[in-house]
Amino acid sequence: MELLKILLLTLLAGLAMSAGALLAQREHIRPKWLEHEFRHSVLAFGGGALLAAIALVLVPDGLGYLGIDSVLFWFIVGGLFFMAIDILLHRYRTSASQLVAMLMDFVPESIAMGAAFALGDSSNGLLLALLIGAQNLPEGFNAYRELRQSTHYKPARIVRTFAVMALLGPLAGAAGYIWFAEHPPLVSGIMLFAAGGILYSVFQDIAPQVKLARHWGPPMGAVLGFALGILGHMVTG
Image 1 (cartoon, rainbow, N blue to C red):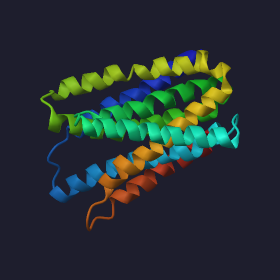
Image 2: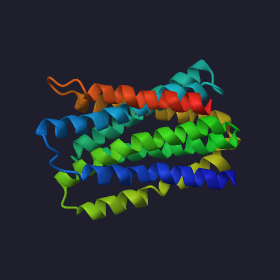
Image 3: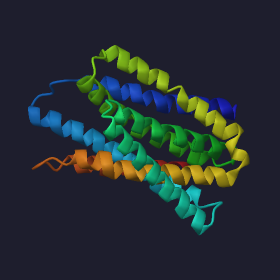
């Protein structure tokens, strides 16, 4: 029964990518300034949710089974790995950098969520599911915009692709529940690896795109995204 819950939660969190793509199809919002501010606010909300996942789940839970040296190692290696992927994407000028970044967040977090349930920490598992969905929505929004601008893919094809990618969540969640939970230090390492990588992504990709000259609404998106994490943490805790 608990495995079924994990499969459902990870699938719903993954389908938030398609929901973000559907939201991104809303073009030409009037007035024009509102369209720009809305887009930037959506990105900032995702950044806030990502930071909440780091601060409230991934790092606190990742500290549980590892010493200081291992904690620092996995956290820094996560950041370095995401940086290496970012450099490769830039070098080959791929049109799917946001898509790759979205999957790099989604898969390890889904593994961590499945493992959390297996280790008896269902409250943090539920919180992580909420935050994964909250961050996948704006990441799907951003990835859709990137693919539409740089490829000839039709909107329906992009949405379907994101829906298929959502199946990676249940696979990763089941792996975390069945296999990885037998090795708690490994799960801690995965959490810290994801936390380091996500932190790199926030400051490399999301935060620079949020700022708008003479507009103050978008940064509040980050505050609201983090506030959602706090609310979930208090409710599930």
